[in-house]
Amino acid sequence: MPTILCLENRIESVREQLYQAYLDSVEYSELVKISQELDQLLNQLDSLKRR
Image (tube, rainbow, N blue to C red):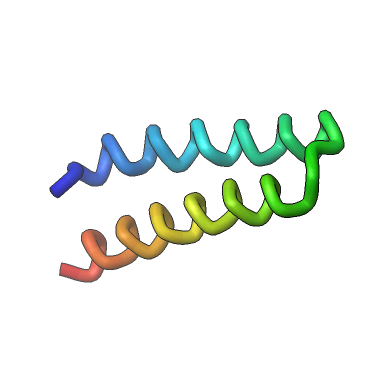
């Protein structure tokens, strides 16, 4: 299982990816895909922090 620091770094990377995709006007389906990945990572982080 990833560490909190590792997850936080990955979350920041995916956030930047999502923002860049938005700026580049990529297709909606791609934005949703990236957003779902970010949601999963945030849920994992929340789970780890609640332990």
